[in-house]
Every structure is written in C-alpha cells, then in structure tokens.
Length: 158
Image 1 (cartoon, rainbow, N blue to C red):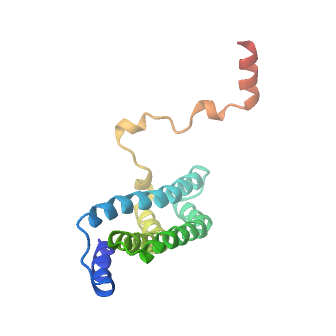
Image 2: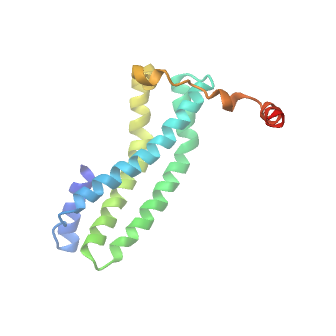
C-alpha cells in the first residue's frame, strides 16, 4: 500500500534505518481496522438516510455532510495521538507511529470524503444487494418497532 511505501521512504530518508520486518504486518492489520471503523460509521449513516426514504444520491450527500466533520476530526485526533510515537527513540515505535499517522490521514482525509461516496454513487442499488443467505434476515426487528407501552403491558401480565 501507499502508506507502507511512504513509511519505507521516510524511515530511510529521515531516521536512517530500514523498516523493521514486522511493521508491514502490523500496519496492515491496523489499516484494515481503522478503515473499517470509519467506513462503517459513514455507510451506516447513508443506510439510515436511505431507509428513511431519501434517494441514493441524497442519502450519500446528507451522510457525507453530517458525518464528514466528525470523521475528519476523529481522524485528526487519532493521527495526532499516533504521531507522538515518532518522538520515541525506539525505531519500531517511530515507524509504527509514522505509518498509522499516514494511514489515518489518507483514510479520513481522502478515502472517506471522496472515494467511498464516489463508489457508492456509481453502484446505486448494488450498494444494498445482499447474498441470498442474508436476505432472510428481516430489515427491521419487530421488537424494536413496538411501542414501549406494549412492553410494559406484557411485563405486567407475566
């Protein structure tokens, strides 16, 4: 990935040391975890707007508008926290901090703002396609749609 390539280049250029053998593995796991975290947040919000009756395009626009500042701020805080690891004298911590900083900035700054909405606009209805095995799951949980008074009445009867 670009983040690992950037870490290799910056590490050799500024820190004067090659990357540690376990760094790409650690960065890959962290990249997947952080990327999915922001993606789940954005796509869940898009799905909420879509199920409320918005079109695909309107749902994507509203979700990006409302979650964009939150995702960007969260990304900046996370990147800043991990960037402090570069102040360490331990090469693994320096490289890991730099790698996570680059990954989070790319993910929160570019991928979630531009790439995910673009792909979802292009895919339209395929965004919500599910394999047959998952289509059996009800879209809404009937227990969550009942009014609270019904639950209270049933609890008193038991």
